[in-house]
Image (tube, rainbow, N blue to C red; front, side, top):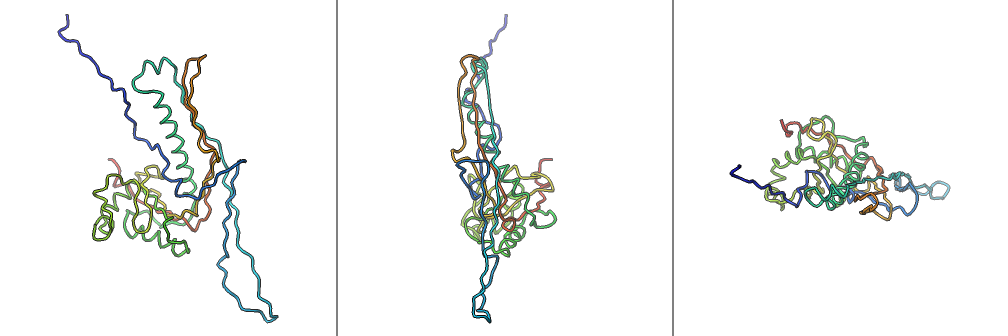
Length: 277
């Protein structure tokens, strides 16, 4: 006969794995709501850097046309469907129905960011060979945009890897109260912040993250477009009585498009020294 009878306690509130569950990037793009159709066309227009002219010898003022480019984002339907039987929900630890809803939404939000990142990665302006993060590297990227006449307003975003963020934390102009009102070493949540006239977003799913070939981006909101069904993200939760299973489905019709190459700079970054060994 045993002299003990151990009991196992199972926590009913589940602990989420480390995954992104919200889109960090859609608000940094020019968005368009599509009423009907599978394409959204963005119009990028300007004078073509025209300069004033004087009246001609014939007494007439020379006329010109505006420069107009139409760029199309093609919408694709994306879905995530989770299904669990009644018995699996009954016999499993934690709130399985809640888990299905939250995780399915997270899958779709990650897809939004990945579409935007894929388009940003088609930009052709870059900072040259990969190097470790520094004030110079950020200033270099921002200067390229300035040379391209990109407006320095509150719509400039610096999309960086955790490694780049780690290097910036060692820059006195970034971390010291002598240079900035924000004190990053005391911040509770530093996933998004503002510094040097840029809206910084730390994103762990940028190309090459954790390697010597990371891709970070500095861009203007008008340089990237994201189109989606005007009805927004669709989430359906239900129960199939005949087969005794529950499901959670999230769907979104969407597409992203690079609108102005001159408004995006790719920072080639070496983050390998900040990766786990």
